[in-house]
Image (cartoon, rainbow, N blue to C red; front, side, top):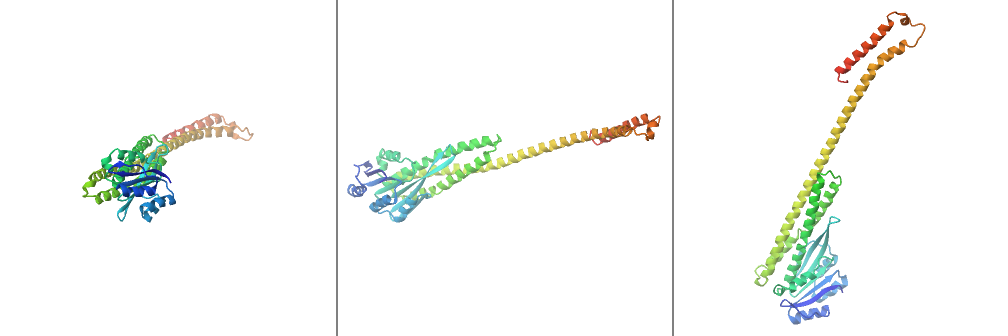
Length: 338
């Protein structure tokens, strides 16, 4: 039996521990106290044996075995079945890891089923045993203390998310190409965390409403109000993270588009400059082409070339070469090719 702890409390004080679950049930009746049983990942047969001792509702037992429930509270006659979601932040992986705590709360018992290593509820038991006046309020005081611990553990998650968002803001303007994927993955974790804790406020409000007016539980009600305030603050901060990440994704898209525009502009300038260089080379090639053409024609030295016998042939050839070169130079210059 995966029993973490098993005790009977009378007037806020721990009495001698029972030797078995059946003994716990009997001692609760004999001592007029309440039993607090902590289980860690019980199997079906193990949880069923507890259910048989305390007459737990089959539907609640089924939910506790399946796990992966959202925070909720269900009433079965005078008993309650409460689901709380614990969270811790895995900073190296930038991932929110969730656990689950299921509580069966009756008039004279509370059975706590934990599905993950966190939270460490032994510390909660120690805190309550150090406050016998609060523990004397019974199972609802245990429920409040566990809810308080679960919600307190949300703070490191919020701080971890906030730290990573700050890093993303630095990455945005550093031109890190991997920031888009990081924003998407962190947004997914924020949304998952937000969905996991969203129903908790309703659970706490319902619990406070159920004990409203009971003077013997006024401290428990005040404690639940404090936990509810903490949950509200966490929800507001997480919603702010979601908005920040959405804005970061928009800013990143804008910066990526701006960098692409800058690259296109640079390519356009380079292409324009390259075109100017091609124009210059082509212009000088054209200027040099005609003198070379004339020189090659009159340099073929055929016998039947009458121009070779002209007295003014040489000056005319030079004049033609220079004239064509000047005409082409002036033409290209006017067109800004040179």
